[in-house]
Amino acid sequence: MEDIKPSANTTAIKINKIWILGAVIIVILVGVGFLYKTTADRKTILPVKSVDVADIGAFANNIPVPIIVDRIKDENKTVSVNLRATQVVSTLADGTTYEYWTYNNQVPGPFIRVMEGDTVEISLTHEHAHGGNQHSVNESDHSLAISGFMPAVLANGDDSHMMGAEEMEHMEAGHAEHSIDLHAVIGPGGGAGLTRVAPNETKIFQFKATRPGIYVYHCASPHIPSHIANGMYGLILVEPKGGLPAADKEFYVVQGEVYTKGKVGEKGHQELDKDKLLAERPEYVVFNGRVGALTGEGALQANVGDKVRIFFGVSGQLASNFHIIGEIFDKVYPEGDIVSSPHINVQTTLVPGGGATMVEFTAEVPGKYLLVDHALTRAIDRGALGELIVNGPDVPGVIESIR
Ligand SMILES: [Cu+2]
Image 1 (cartoon, protein in one colour):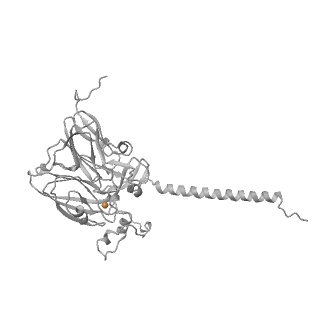
Image 2 (cartoon, rainbow, N blue to C red; image 1 turned 180 degrees about the vertical axis):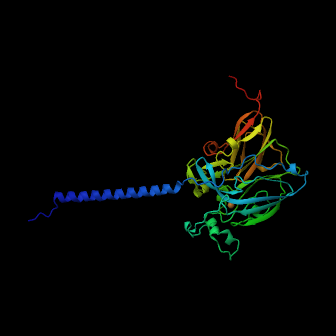
């Protein structure tokens, strides 16, 4: 009779087959995992792009002269301000590029200076150009799928409008429109509703600057936090009638947050990370648009004895703990109130998102001072660091080494 039991050989072959099958499955899984990971990596690490603007950071001393310099005391004027909304690539940090959205190719945008009682005429043009170079519009690069918000051109009620490739490109990139909300304006949206500009469009509106103060302005087009994080903000100063008291040096500093997909310090071209934006976890916290904008050649410069005034604003979502290492503010005008009596001898002042302050101090001792957000990881690790260089002869009796 034949033995129907499987032989030892047959069993061994079956076990071998199971092992081989298992090994093949493991190899396939590992391979797929590896491919998935390298593809994902490739998505986040993009090579640096060529820049449209060499230096996006506004110079701290790029500030109009005091209001009384070019007018008779208390005389009101109509002040015209021309703003251009742009999308430009520039350098965020060493070896890292970013596409900024700006007013006039600088971050923060131009410092606007008017006097109480002035009429301010704001003209906003949405430029299609990329820093002077046209986009190379390649429609095949873009999906025609439209998601998110209703484009401005349609939301404005212009039903007959046919969207061109240019506008489609803007819309897909999230900048179908720009606008401006100035906190110095009284009226719905601070002017945002009157300045919604689609590509190549210009809108002009005017307002009466009735309340002296230092105010933030920013883009208020959807998705608003993205437009602000990308660089669309600045300060407007409404001086009281007759102007502010004279200062020897005035500076313009705005703290902003940049939410990049890669971690802080990662090289290459970086894109906005909306999840980090919603979580309020910026990779970079910067003064005047980029890491290092206010250091080296961009440092604030003063002389011993100078009365220094800094207009400091915060564009983003994190309140700033503004401090200058080695200085005490003689005067702080908190919350942008430049009319009331100031606070005296302040070390650190809290400036809320969408808020600003004016601080004053006398440069007493020569040397290098550091402007920081005193939540110090933002300064040391994320970029919120500027330099003030005080030049001049040593002043005995204020600070001295004993041995
Ligand atoms: Cu905008």
